Length: 420
Image 1 (cartoon, rainbow, N blue to C red):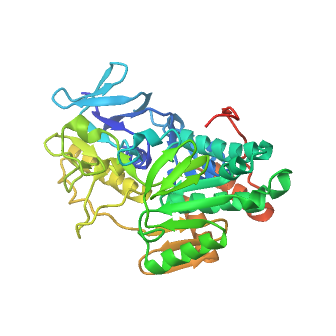
Image 2 (cartoon, rainbow, N blue to C red):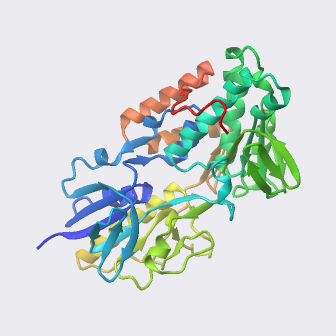
Image 3 (spheres, rainbow, N blue to C red):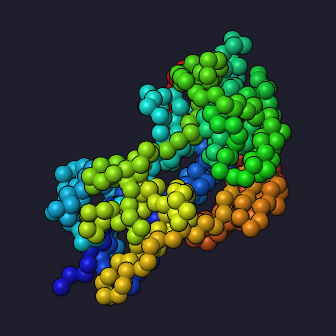
């Protein structure tokens, strides 16, 4: 008799945690992902802003499970699920049967009905996104160095980030430091310190998910870095020439989108209800209703806490959900009762503002400033996979802290200097 076959779609935090926790269980696992790497997404913005290289925050999925003979990794794209046949449908026409299916397919950026903005205002969810943004930031300075028209030069040195959540705040802070401390001595025709970094938020404050005093601290730190904040007005247009904020047009050549997310089409594959962001609405045990042994976790799932508020779409939540589903699968195979309802344990919220300032809210204690920045850094290093990468990232950060030099400033897959 063959082992129970678990198919996991998505090699993010939830999927990897699930497969790790199934070690030793009488199952064979097939993990399917359209990319060959597991990405440490919380540090993705640091690739986009030249602090870290891609290899420091991503690892081949196959390497993670090389010592697990019962784990098969497939580089493929899932396009649907046949619940009756218990099969996952791949883009190339192949079908993969399953006994238990776990969808952990994540989310992408959302443009609130304006997908035509994506080419000029990329979001930040993948390594490809990060290298695209990094390339555009660096090329903006290079093009400004050669530009003789003052108006065009000013537009090239204007960077607009849409959305003042953690990603937007972190991007704005690092781009400002790049322009003001790293690049000034390297250019002859421009003063990079005159670059304008504009952070746009339709709401009334930055980091709205944090306590108001921490949000206010973050605002003040951003202003110290020279970031210009625009509150209370939504972006109404994004073009290659600039961005319209409310009714005001701002000429700029680099726009980064950090304003919203949209889940993968997992709910459509399963034919079940979804919330406004497209996340599949699951039951208290993370199962897709009426689908049998199908679980949905991570950013793909809409999960409510005991107080009715949604479980946040962050890495710790996805890892906890992956661990829970692993327990549920093992319990069923062992003939034990299924674990009680999924309970999310919030471990705190963290955000960094530039090189030496951060805010942390653990609920029972709040930290801000230099101490919070060190705690933030240690926490992120701890959750990286493998000693080698922990040392590499720690060394990169130490070098940047001491030298003020960003080490990952290569322009790759170079776009034409006249493009965009």
